[in-house]
Image (tube, rainbow, N blue to C red):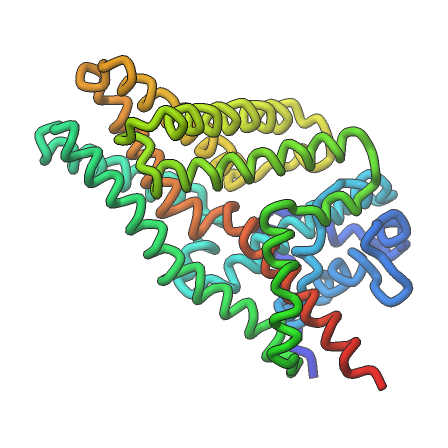
Amino acid sequence: MPHINPDFADEIKKYGADDFNLCFNCGNCTAVCSLSTNDESFPREMIRYSTLGLEDEIKSSLKPWLCYYCGECSTDCPRQANPGELMMSLRRWLTAQYDWTGLSGLLYKHIGAYIGGMLVLLAGVIGFTNFSGFDREQVIHYGHLFEMLAIAGVFAAILLPNIIHMWYLTIVKPKVKPSLKVYAQSTGDLFVHMFTQKRFLGCEDTRENRTRWILHFILVLSYLSLLFTTVFLNWFSTTSKFVIWLGYFESAAIFIITTVFMSMRFRKVDTMHKHSQPSDWFFVIWLFLMGITSFAVRLLIDLNNLDSQFWMYTLHLTVLAQWALIIVPFGKWTHFLYRSFAMYFQKILELNRTVKRP
């Protein structure tokens, strides 16, 4: 028998959804959604589950992650129930359910906790640079070491267990038993969606949607490339002209695109950007700061002026620490990872159904 949580509506409102209980089940959202089929009522089913408080059904579902929030459902809703924002809120809620530390839910629901964590890391970086005597080579060396350890540590200790928990809730607990062959055959979808987010192209084919997809595609490639350039090619210490200019290009691309995204959120140009939550702003602002401070630090190094402007590297290291230890494991960045694995798990489910057909 399904477990019903009568307080679920109040809980999900803490993650951003306010008006979904206005829904009177007319079906307009399903009629306009490109993800709907004869067999799948999308996003209507998730609205119904949320209204009834069917937590287990939501936890076992991948549907919130399949939604790219094109906004058509919210635009066409006659009751202004805003189903698109509900799907976004369900993704935040699911992130908290996957997270074994419990910190994702705390940070999503309480902006004070977010700000407090940021201030603690700011104090930590300032304390470290002061303890080192502002020795440029030592601080940059340990800053680079921190980057490597933070990436490995966050993935191994937090993100990997959370992905395993997601797999348990969506594949194992519903008693789906795909073969190893099905897992292997589905792997391509994981990497394709991780790097291209191509499912968004399945939304309504408009110039705005195509532009948004291109910007996201460039941003993802720029971010991942800058991560590789900074961590593995040691951008701040290298003398390779190719690596140096590659880093400049990547950081500039991040700076430019995040500026566009912040402008869209500020101006509320479409349905997706009308209801920005603190986690949305933290994500895009800190990614912007990552791009601009990385660019500035490398420029100061090339101008032989970093020693007199060492505060810039301290600022960059602060932004990096806050990004790596708060936003990546517990903030909106995780949507990039969970959505990619959701596409992978969805492919597994589809192939498994095909294999079992007589």
